[in-house]
Image (spheres, rainbow, N blue to C red):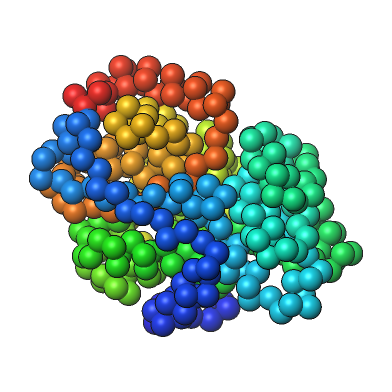
Amino acid sequence: MTRTSSDGAFSLADIRANAKQISPYVVHTPVHCWTGREIGQLMGPDSDIYLKMELFQHSGTFKARGAMTNMLALSPEVLERGVTTISAGNHAVATSWAASVLNVSAKVVMIKTANPLRVEAARAYGAEVLLAEDGPSGFALTEKISTEEGRSFVHAFEGRCTALGTATLGLEFSESCGPLDAVIIAIGGGGLAGGASAAIKMLDPDCVIYGVEPEGADSMHRSFASGQPVTIVPETIADSLAPPMSLPYSFALCRDNIDQLVKISDDDMCRAMALFFRDMKLAVEPACAAATAALTGPLKNELTGKKVGVVLCGSNIDWETFSALLKRGEEASVAKPTFAHGE
């Protein structure tokens, strides 16, 4: 049984039950053993790198698991009144997707700086999208919608249902790979890292879990240091990893199940994006590249020769932004040749 600070604990049986409940709706995403030329040169021939390909999930992100878990927990009467949320992008898309699948109304608030591709994706799933000036005004608008219209708020990363959703990813990963020496997971608010790490630790207690944050969005680092959730002003290209705070439930799960936190730079993520494009032929957003940036950067020496799992949390990015960041990654690789082209 894993410890939490609110909402109650959950067990492996609870995770399995939720996995069964959401299985008609979500993708059991594949695990890929990465054997490309460049990753082999970077990590050495004795390293086994397993990628959990959550970018192939419905809505393009792991957040589909938490959104669906939250909505299935609502009574039919409550669900009929619809849902609302606020998000920089991926969670809004996932909530819109889940609402479309369950045939309920979604009214989502997105910050005006959200990637246009994500705004259009949410609308394509049938959601009404409202654009807010910034986070505080967005949360206020979402609260108003929930109060006045009776819509249920689906949180992007906090709460037991959200964690149970992301725990199904950890369950799938462990059951697909068997015991792993380490697993690397990106951290935004901590919903993914908290839930997935809890499940992995239940099945594989000796596995070392690394949580990865951008240098400019290190709320979990600061929360660990202070012993409680903190609020920050994030500044990073990885908008999917940049909520302005950590919160009690996800913080407690991360504190209890993550062994070490690691920071990576924006350039590190761009280099990893370029590596994925060259070696895996994948176009990923910065957040999706964060865990690999840690693997091939600050954790390289520590994890060389190990059996390592890496969560590719999702990817929703437009071509123009991707092209610019890919160019930045190639230029950064030249400036830091230990990461460039397998050298």
